[in-house]
Length: 257
Image 1 (cartoon, rainbow, N blue to C red):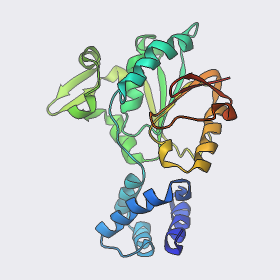
Image 2 (image 1 turned 30 degrees about the vertical axis):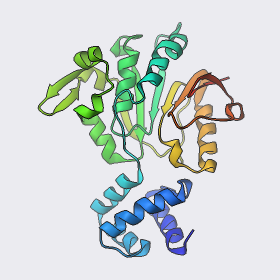
Image 3 (image 1 turned 135 degrees about the vertical axis):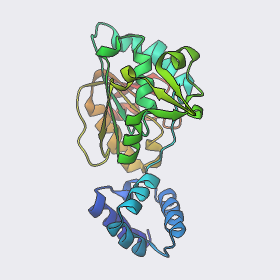
Image 4 (image 1 turned 90 degrees about the horizontal axis):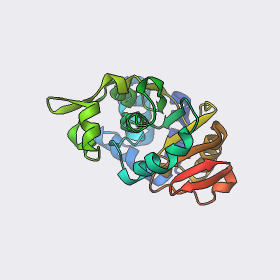
């Protein structure tokens, strides 16, 4: 790690509490170098000096650092597995589930969860915790307004039932929005709530180092109830699930023993 970037990592941790050393260095460095060059800086040192005194640039830096690519029912076949194979077992004899959408980005994932759970419970009984590191995306998620492209995988019946067209956008209806509580949360630094029945964390762990992944798998396992399920993204298979107290429930689904 170059001295300039190394110092930048330490400074960012001091300023924001975010530890960049847990992210894959080459990817993060490339992303941040292109950002500071675009802003007219020559190195990480001068860029950080500006981040300290410019809240708007700091917000943009945090936005660039967190990866916000999302859509409803992303990788639709996986959501079908959740609905048809995983949830019937999880919901059996349970009045409600404790559910967490971790690193939820702009809200498509937790709202998708609410829509799927509505086949099993009345909306008044659905409560989903949705967290992200980036306050900007949380604010967007709370508004619940999306471009049409984000809805391309949504089944027609769900689109009709839970969305209203507003000009060029689609708005998630109030009943779905009320099921989700958004909070800021740093996966690597903050404690996890306990006793979840279902945790969804998809297309995020791919950006972390192996050391950080191992730490997070264990933290996720510890925060699930026995029999609870951890659902990961389609590039994030856990190759030794037993190390973390998991067993395979289906491809990309892990059940806590």
